[in-house]
Length: 415
Image 1 (cartoon, helix red, strand yellow):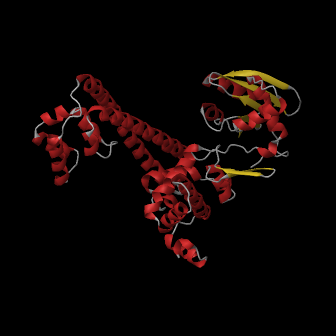
Image 2: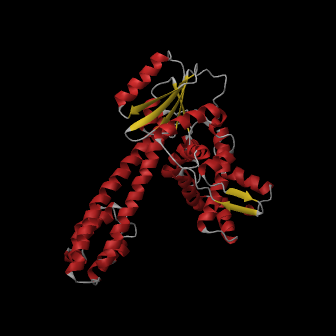
Image 3: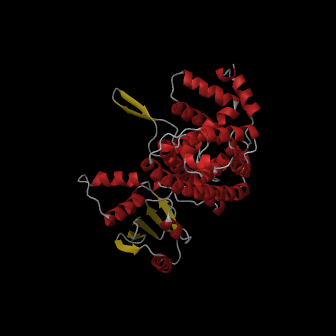
């Protein structure tokens, strides 16, 4: 959808948003005069401003250009149907500003006017913001915030690992997975080797049984290792502050793990209600974590991407080629939604054990000299073409069908 000349907008607005206030530049369709104002970032102020525009222009559509596609200001403006939002990439507006201001000067009112001029002079380059369904928008936020919590879990466990290496490294061998409640509870109850060795064997057996560690040989091995372990150091100045830090971090880790579980439960309740969820749930290695993330990445507006190449470029796995004279430079795409690219690259890595041709393709890329990450991006590039076709035609992915197509083309992946 483009902003065409035959669409009758009563006015055009450019907004330079900020944290506390927003600079506004407005031009009515019937005259060439620019009206500048400042809009405070308060719900009441935004509501009064929108109501004033509705009354002044009799509820006719108004085109609004701003530098963001989501956020509190966008959410507030989307409540009013007569406001048609046209988001602009900040780098686009910065380049437009640099074209006419070589000195590098910048001011908020000027940026609002430039956003308005960009809307008026280059309407064919802008697309109106068409929000997806409420359930899809909720899922997008849930999966992204869940990943933020997972990153926090990794950060806390890394700090715990570093502290434990200073005085109690054995516990890191007893628990391979640090992002678990059993590890968290163990170091909270016995933060030092001396305290763990003071515990009775019956108490240790009961602890592991309470945390669903039911393999007797594993429990016995851990208990024996605890009793036979030798301390790395007996220096109180090293043990005291590190053990205190470990207990504090364990409390944080427990809260984070509980939060991740709550997000998982909410995602599991929202994702199946969306029509296309079954398409992504059936992908190799998708599971309950990546299926909702892939669904949120593709969305439900199939007219948004005209081809798989557009999707690959948007995600950021398609390389960028720069040519100048006799020079040619191919590099990876720097400007893209990082979380979406992360979703496809991580899922591509997770699909390798579950998909025959994905494993063969990854090994082929590695044999050609590609690094691990480059091979994963190449696999993600290939996966997007396949999943885009399934999503666009609403056809579930079938491994046998794709392997048959590879055989017909004589692909070395199935030779």
